[in-house]
Image (tube, rainbow, N blue to C red; front, side):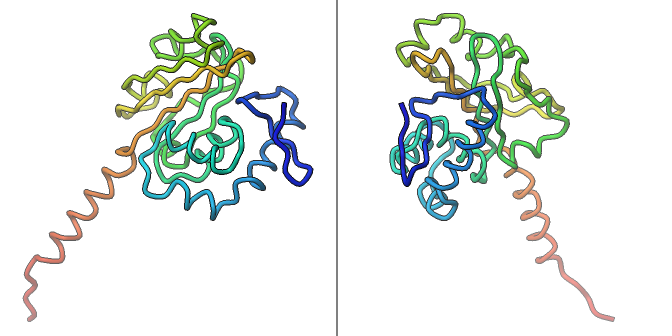
Amino acid sequence: MYLSWSGVRLSQAGYVSNDPYEMEADHFAAGLLMPERLFKQIIKGRDPGLSVIENAGAQCKTSLTAAAIRYADLTEYAVAVIISTGQLIDFCFMSDTMKSLPQLSWLKKGAPVPRNTETARFNADPSRILIGDRATIEIDVLDWLGGQRSAIVTEEVVGLGRYGKTLTVLSSAAIGREDEGEDDEDELIDKWTPRFHR
């Protein structure tokens, strides 16, 4: 089943096609149905995570998956959106802030879902996926994306029903903000340091 708008089809209920042409059409439709300016207004001032994605999808009348991908593309927060089937990754989209973490391991199509994650536990029970069950935990980003820097992220998992897929959203409001705080403090110290003219 598809949502249509001006002849554009966008898959519903989180369906993700393996057809590259359909994926390209979904990306095009995401930009058309969720224009950058409007989408940024919808997400502005909201904490990162699944609830803001669901709200954006509802307001734009798009699938949860399409809204999640657009969110990862446009948010200022550290976010990764992962679709998986069973214990395998279908795809992963990351926000620029998440990509800024040093030496990440990029999750590729067909890679295994990391073992010690809520998604791996969730996907081990297909009935949870079928009924659209949800789970949320705090986890170290290293467990999902590797790299060199430990940081706690929220892992939110939702089953996408009869398609047998799972949507995982990793999010953090803190990643990328620590350095800004240090820069602000350095700037403040420099501003108030007395200078003597000769």
